[in-house]
Image 1 (cartoon, rainbow, N blue to C red):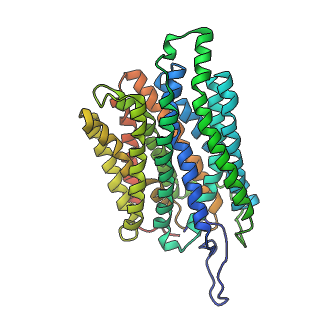
Image 2 (image 1 turned 90 degrees about the vertical axis):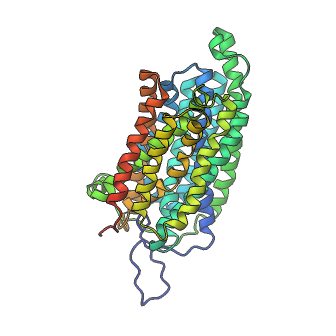
Length: 432
């Protein structure tokens, strides 16, 4: 499986392993699963913060989506440097660097709250996301490395289930802590010093949540540092061309990278709009706190689907399964936007189940046969996650321009259609 370093771990001198196939490191998979849970949970908290900041700073959809834009722009800016850092200091030390960067981002919420400045919140999210990018550059290839290549699709999907566990748990706590603190008064009714005081007071709920995460990150970083020499014989091939972008010349990898861009964009767009969508009178007319708690169903569906998918992908063609779930997501979008009430709301939430195997399957299909171009491929895939910045912002612009969240959902529908095409294209094994 691709996205693994050039490591030779065979104990049989008569058996020559291919570079970067896998490594035997008992107990290390549990550590990697924990990383997936952490960065998944932190990313999903954006879906809770968006309606909070939208109310505090009286933002429109486009302005509110700047939260996701700043967060996911880190993938564009940090993806390649992060891969270079990991190649230079190794996977375990790279994980520590990423965790500490995330910790700094969490602490930056303190001055952002004290000054009640939206721009500072966005900067804190960018720094936090920069650490997430570095950790993800480590986690995705490492889980592919820790086992035989033929089960990489299934193993990565199983690891992504822990990512979804984080995205399920964190919004539940975040909705109660952050959205549940909204006062009876609205920021739109205040001006001057009263508005500043209200914003500062209400944003303390955000600070409390991220300070708790900062403590957790410090503990995990310390534990990872204690095991920094766990991997032996780690090697990385030097980049060919500009930071490995020559890999995009490979049709399968280039198409797959595009689909990572589109998938993350579609997933984040829907997740970011769930609260606003479920609040609409024509859907479920819920309060912010209640709608926020239902975000867990969206991400929880992805978690359940990944555990199931890890088994299905062992027996069925990953490409065909990918095409099937992408078409399923489009079908659910059509149902949601053409119905009302609970059917409309829950069909949108059910898209999480369709999303379940998309990222790991696109990732592994795109990266087959990369071999020792491990970190390069991982860095470029992480740059493609920049779609989480672009597509939600575009969706927000469409919602503001046309005045309809229903019509805006055509943007993620287009993304899913292209992903379905990639699944069918990649249904056969890659050729080296």
